[in-house]
Length: 552
Image (cartoon, rainbow, N blue to C red; front, side, top):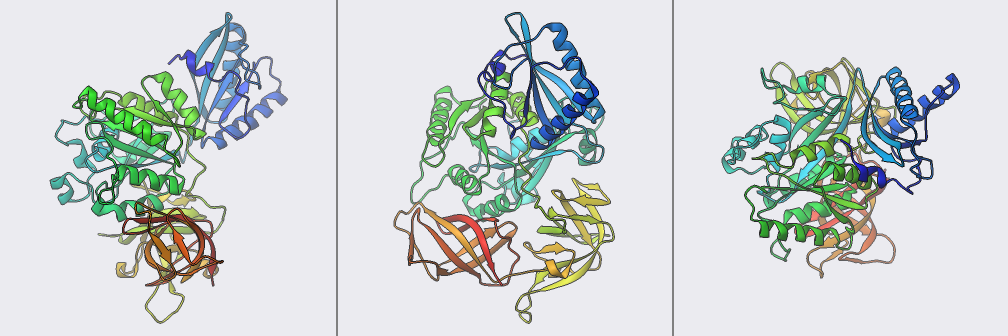
């Protein structure tokens, strides 16, 4: 895995306290006091990187590549390995470079957790027929596609999706990585296909692929998914043979639409070109050229970066974190070309500051889906954004609106079962995506957007809220006025709402215009949290912003 260019790129780059990379000149002759300080530094970097971090040996804090002797380098690596082992973390040397007969090395450290793992959530988006579901099936199943869509059948939820070949619902698949970075997927066992619990048990890092719909007809499902699944990153999948088409008033390429949604929600994204095995070279070059133009458009302003080798993977991981580049991968789900680089990128890609967690000790779960399961009854699935949930806990679910209570009702429920990644657990912690079985509670009373909380003080719902919004539309003459109705997406909430008032002197919001507005739900009160990002949609008009106040 040696790569000269990667270490070269660190030259002159000062060490930062705010990322997941630590510089050390050498670690020799360590005292107990120095070891204790190093343990604290490693914990800090692991926290910054979501359980992963890099250490560079032979470099100064100012980014000067001085290098050290082989003897001191080996001792430094051995000392660091000993310290990380005592902290239940694994260390791997990923890169070494000779500088004037001296050595500079880059080391990768990953936390080994007994009861947990590092989780990366990737929203898989892009236009219809781009190969999103097939790519999810190949990455999670570990088996290449046969060229006729065999890999995607494991991802689809419904028979009509298999028949049409098009995703209409949100589905999830996982793959894992061991402590030494080896991919763990459904096909890595010669004896049988690994189940989700098998993959979770063998992995120190789990990548969750959230497969979203690419057809215009299911755009509301995709918008809801991007808002509610809180992804760390988005993977925009583009068929190399079809490319990205120019947008008109009558036609919108969903790849561009999904990119705009990622920008609205501040979700970092990268691009994967599929079907390169069946794409003529001239068409491939045309598609790459189009993506590069899109990357440089105002509002996106990223440097397109083609990933062609392992060196590029390391460069992409570092520069992607600061938002300066748009990594572009080229893969074939049939031949397997380029998949190793994409997997390596996912292995080293750090988790974001967990968007599924809030700084609250109080239990708070956003309901995203509901089911009825034989033997378990009503089951809800969603993101636990605060506190913990344990088996047997008594919680409140709501708001349930029947027209009698203006603010909506909350009913008491008992937690009968808990699962995470299809693994039975006794306790779920903040940041988990979990299914919760509710004893004796009718499914008819549950809908997406509800919350599970532990106390009446947190059982809140609102008809109105204030928001800062920006309007975007393919039609430059669009105007938004008082009384304008649109579907609002706020976390797991999806409901039609009316702009009741435009604050200040404004009476009209034009395309690309910004305003402070008061919004009222039309059907029922919902729980919304101040600071939550939102999107709105009505026809070809879009809006984005955030909730800045709730109206009691």
